[in-house]
Length: 442
Ligand SMILES: Nc1ncnc2c1ncn2[C@@H]1O[C@H](COP(=O)(O)OP(=O)(O)OP(=O)(O)O)[C@@H](O)[C@H]1O
Ligand SMILES: [Mg+2]
Image 1: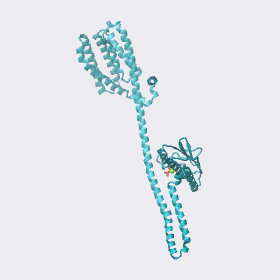
Image 2: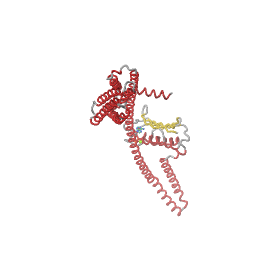
Image 3: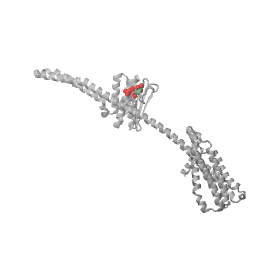
Image 4: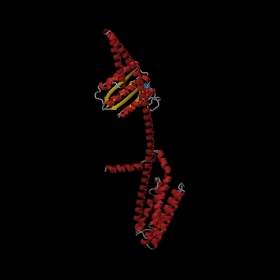
């Protein structure tokens, strides 16, 4: 029942939808193509009529006799000729504005001849009379507007009446006439209703297709943009990785290498001294010890920069606090961390959250000219919310490289966050500064 009422509502809404309430451009385009559609549909109706007129011809010889046969032959000749003429016109002058009028004139003429033929084939008592409903159906697929459709269908019905009752006055007043007129009225209404519904469906279908095509175009554009972004990001990441390797190699060489060379020298010197006077090497051992301590803290710092061990050992909050202290020490920007207990975070979430905060703080130092940064980490339902807010100059929408014009920091953050199903935003904060915010599903 509910399904039936839904179907009815849908049908009514189709009739209720005015052309203007749909995509106006598409409706106009549909109207512009109506002529071509008319000629094509008219040609298919004519082809069916031509084939039908010729195919059933031999049956007349078998079934009908005398006047009835002659009347049917005449009718078939008129239909076949009209259909052939229309098909030739559709082939050679499809663009002519008069094509719809020619079609309707031919249909009216054929129907009048059909009315006359049916009247000659038998009186109103015979079933020939009721074949005259059929020509009305020729208009169903033609793309008329409602008023034209009503006018054309009524014209065809009247031409059937003219051929039958008009040209044969002796049949008038026959009791079968009342039944014929009432059925003809019902068939006319049905044909108008069916024809207009088909017309509206075709128009709706056209509008949907247009919308779909536009949507597809936008989608393709979006995909192309995203692909370009990802390609650029990949190139950037490769560059950053290479820079990082160069930096680590330099630090290993300059700092660690120097320290180790020094230690090797001291060790050799110590062993030589030991040969001569074992008690004199105390000072050298102290030197070796402090050299080893320096080397250890250098290695620790290098390792921390690559991936702070405390992120795995002590958790996200401790690692972010370490990052904040380091940022403060290096830049003098006040760095506040607000956070609740965040135990048991998945490794992927921990890593993404840490990298987002790391890049956001780097950006604050590089671009913001801020005096304070607030980092907040909190659980909200099934997500971890990470926000970094500074009180600096604020994001410049012109320079923000969510597209690939600037750096890849923001883009990389967004990609990382989206790769684990989170959401990311970079906005101007109120009253000033920048707010980086992401939610990561847990
Ligand atoms: N906290 C901030 N305050 C002001 N502007 C910012 C801030 N963060 C980013 N921006 C602006 O957004 C732009 C893009 O930042 P993004 O991190 O993507 O690139 P980058 O820092 O310039 O380069 P990269 O991160 O690749 O080394 C920056 O050039 C800067 O103009
Ligand atoms: Mg950056």
